Every structure is written in C-alpha cells, then in structure tokens.
Image (cartoon, rainbow, N blue to C red; front, top):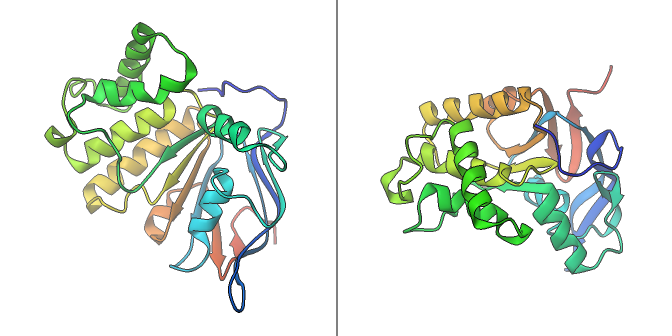
Length: 236
C-alpha cells in the first residue's frame, strides 16, 4: 500500500525540537524538545502514562494543534506557517485518523461509513462504494458491508473505522488508543490487523498507555513529562 503523496522524502512524519506549552500560572509545558522521525512503512508505538504528553503529541503530529516551537514535517512538507485551510487539506489527504471511540455514523452501513472517508476528495459515488468495499474486505469485514454499527461488535466497528482511515490511501495512520474500548481478544485481533497492514507497507503511528499493545509495534517511543524517555530504535 503506497501513499498518494510523492515528495521524495523518506519520512512520513518528522518532528524537530517540538515544544508545546499552554498559558497559565505557571505555563503548562506539555511537550519539551521532542524530535522524532518516522520512516515510511514503520510501525511506531508511542507509549506513556496519563499526563505524559501523548495526547498533545497526537494533536501535533496530526496537525490538529500547532507547536509553540519547533517544526512538524508531513511527507517532507514543513507545516509551519500553513493556513488552517492548508492544514485541513494535509489532514484529509495525508493522515488517516483512528480514535478510541469509533465515531461511526449510526443508521449508516459499514460501506457508507468507510466511503465517507472519501467525501472531501471529490471521488465519484460509484468509486467511493467500490473502494470502501475493497477496504472492508481487506480488514476482514466483507460479510458486514451492509450492516449498521449497532449490528456489529466493538472490534468490528473499530475495523470499519480503520478501513475508513485507510480508504483515501494516506501517508500514515494515526491511531489514538484504538484498543481502549476493546476486550483482550478483540485487542489481540486488532493489533494483528495493524501488523498485517504495516507488513503491506502502511505507516502506522499508534498512541497507547498499554505496554502489551506497544510491544506489538516494531518501534516504541516512551514519553514522560512531555519528553522522550526512551526510543527503541536508538542505538546504544
């Protein structure tokens, strides 16, 4: 699976000395001098306890929040100085979001929910349906295409959400605690799916507080108090 963006950069995401603070007395420094480069086709797990800065890092990587200082490059493009509209375009084309809460539209079939991931790309309805069905088959839900969210298990709903995140062929998938609402069996199954998608070339960045989930990622970065405490890819 390849990205629809070709800039020649070997990295899907690069964070260079990123810090993020929020006003207060004193100011709250959520991230401090964080530098991470994520090569294409990597499976990165970002782990940390509550308050470690994971959520802020997710928002910065996904261009939902601008850093206070430092640079965020998506596919080699420096997002600093981009307008809100340009950042919205980056998100819709380059990032596939998966959240803990599936955010599927009720009363709408799995195929339509996945096809909604192409609504802002100008893709014709017939092609949206074809691509949605192909992606649902890829995540093992070819038997659930016409089912509504309330007719599916939590694990199946999250697979629909993953299919929706992938249907526009993003540069990377950004998954925020995707197993947080699943039992252990569905968690294991979902992580196997992420590993399989990564084996096929998808770049996956997964945020989690669960060490067992992080262990299934090829690389683990641990956050503590807004700083990188460890990075399993770093050479001793």
